[in-house]
Length: 254
Image (cartoon, rainbow, N blue to C red):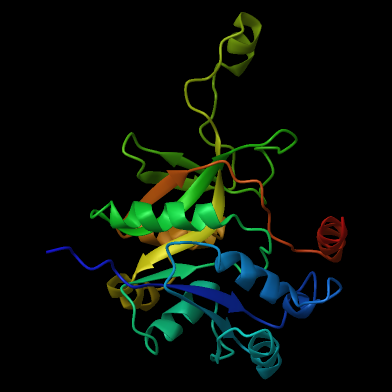
């Protein structure tokens, strides 16, 4: 008898307010709202049984439904996307929920699949996420690019805005033409959660390391729970500013 595959639902948290780019999820210079682009990319993932946009405003719900998608109106006081996803998990039945950023219209579907498949294959983990080697031109010292270091089994050891791991003998190795053994990895903000873990996670107050680095995934590690990390080459980036959105529009019009 074959085992039934766990039901997996993708959730795209989308809020209207944005400090650097107000109402960016509804920006529609391409002919469709930004959040709809995210939805269309997520639909290409094989691992998702359903996708829902978790919105904090009726205008977002209306835009998604006009494009044939499913959206639910959530509370407007959630501190982050995970908290918004946890509310959805109380209203929709699934074994696994995937938090897909609402401002990543070019997210690779295979990246979603890799994270979901890794969680299914990692019984020790409550969460799975993705990391990628730094691309040419990306500066590991940039605090806006989050770094992660892994154990031998792909378990996250730590996330930081600082450059980790620190290459102590970088100057010597560069002179000798020796490559570092540990490759710096950039964290990709996609999260896959076991449904049973979500109420536990949101019940914990923000932890010391989480508040210090402003990285909510550290709350998981501080409480001793496991995060599995799939390493893939990821080229997509989130859209935080009008300038980045303008570049996305240009790419769409080519």
